[in-house]
Length: 412
Image (cartoon, rainbow, N blue to C red; front, side, top):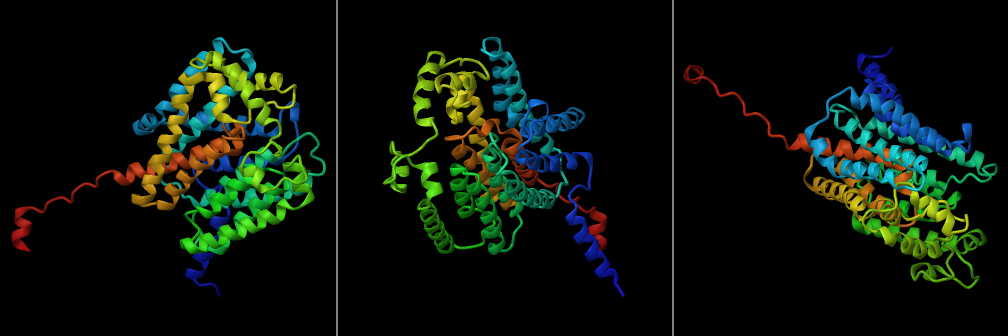
């Protein structure tokens, strides 16, 4: 016979298995994480990758939700540098070389702003919904990578594996077990390594060692770091790794640290100086949104379709006039989040938001993370919006209790 307490516990567990329950706003936030699973599918309906369809779906869902509700003044204030970047990026369409590519890129940059504003309105949203969704998506990613790697062909799942860092951070945000945190990190690392994503693998290890949910002292974290270093050394001795990373059989991990010419950078080392020289002629205004991809194709003889460096991308496309407000927005957000992690009431949420900003800065060195809209930028914007909004509400002074009347005080 099931008691009333036992029945409520079962219903609570069943509720936490289904993160889709809630208001349309809450479902929209959950969608931003669920859509990550689409990016692992190597299909091109109507000639577009599934990652493109994923962010278009997010745009179609988020835009009506944001436009039909109020925008918090503090959210608008925090988002102001990013909006300034969007306005200037829109202006660069007047002189960009490819208007179609520029418009598509602008639309991609708009979606994270919508996700950030929507997250501010999620006053009673429960973080476990995103954690549960992240676990589901990570499990789906493992299945899809195993199923499609042999038949992926020209499709690369490496951009999608960047999302594993986000999925790990959110899936473990409420973890009370360091073993569970390490397990999820190991799964994410295995996905990144299986697709050959070098930077994602390194960032995953860094994310694990700095994770707010890794309930270990620094000596425990150092021990894990030593184990990761030993694992990385063993992997570096495999033939697959050496063919992917090195040009010379005698090369080692020391060459990676010293940026030796024996390290295979997939054309980045040759492209970046040429791209910087070409873009320096319009260093202030930029060459226009979408132009960095066109230049990368031309300067690399069709070897690279993107700069694979987002600092250089923004410099080329929107110049210093657009790059400064763009990166200032994320730097400001990073400082707010880490400060809130020390003084806020929801320290793990704020810590994860700050951690994801550091991840963004690292991945931007060798990847195209700012245009990985569905894989990275939109989920990160949601976490940042939740962190900022809850920090603002925690700072709001509570009203003083109503003073008792003189007569009530006398009759007490």
